[in-house]
Amino acid sequence: MTTVAAVASPAGIRLQALPPLALYVHLPWCVRKCPYCDFNSHEPGRGAMPIAMPGTGASPASPALPAELESEYVRALVQDLESALPEVWGRRVHSVFFGGGTPSLFSAESIDALLSAFRARLALAPGCEVTLEANPGTFEAAKFRGYRDAGVNRLSIGVQSFDPGALRALGRIHGAEEARRAIDIARASFENVNLDLMYALPEQTPERASADVGEAIAARTAHLSFYHLTLEPNTVFHRRPPPLPDDDSAALMQDLIAERLAAAGYVNYETSAWALPGRECRHNLNYWSFGDYVGIGAGAHSKVSFPERVVRSMRVKQPREYLKRASAGQAVQESRELSRADLVFEFMMNALRLAEGFAVSSFVERTGLQIAAAEKPLVRAEQRGLIERDSERIRPTALGRRFLNDLLELFLPER
Image 1 (cartoon, rainbow, N blue to C red):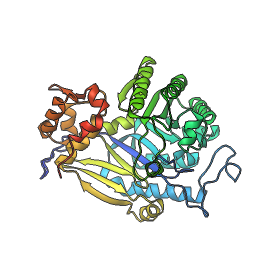
Image 2: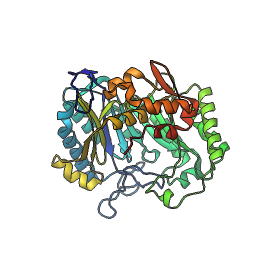
Image 3: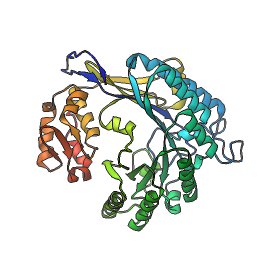
Image 4: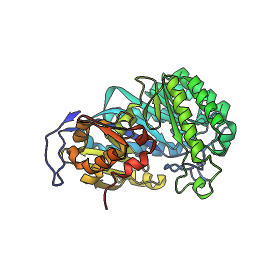
């Protein structure tokens, strides 16, 4: 950690040291927007600059962004980072994460150019974890070797399911065989691979969910993420809900997944994350432990700590507007200092996702507050059996992990 002078703010925040720092890079384009997705992802403008699909000028195995758009966005990202440097100057970056969208639409040359620009401007820690998200519909062996050579050392593949019917219902651009092929290609180039999967899918049965988890286990990647499909506002599925399993069936799937993964040696260290021992995602652990991160790219969020305050900021969301604003050093759309109540809620919203919870000392270190600032909601949570605690550690119970939203609502700031 970077040691700083302790200065009390008017709000009473007092940080003895700054937390670890990460870098998030948002690459916002997709071949096609999935009907369940509420992320800041976009299909490139139709007509003038569509994504090049196989047989239309792209690699025969991989869709691609128009070269002009890709180059323009890479330049904007570098300019965005340069504008953010004064906030984090001299601090070491422990992880980099390329998220989206579909980052694997970008060429290996562009990822190499970005990582070179990051190294020239930031102090990347030795062994820095560098993750890139990939869609199985964009896989090509040479391209992914290029990512590895550029410095990417962790790949996260959005498989979602191995069931052809489920993939069609989810609007994915890949099929089951493409997912299997993508895993084979990934494992040939990367030792550290994550698979993203979902459950409680349209018309999914526990038996089909079990088949998915069985294939995921057989792939034997270092990390697995299993997410419950939810109907998020401003999505196609929210406007036109598909036939989903009922709550009892979804709970049965959740239990089945947990039992099979635990039996296979995976550790459920966070609500939706499973890893072989010692193979947790360091970037996401930084989020969940309330570390700092600079987010660049359209719609990216940042959380940066200073001796006497913690500041959140967000970049403009629309890619075209972002390109204009970033080139002028004006990518940040809004920025605000977190209040005491915000700090309590945001810390708990992250740390209580972890199976082991958090050390009381880490709350003090990351928020600049004493644990007494959270005492009232902690008492209510303990009375309801949602947490257990002692003088050194606070962790969610099995009930608290099952009903995490109910637990987190207890810490919402009063407005």
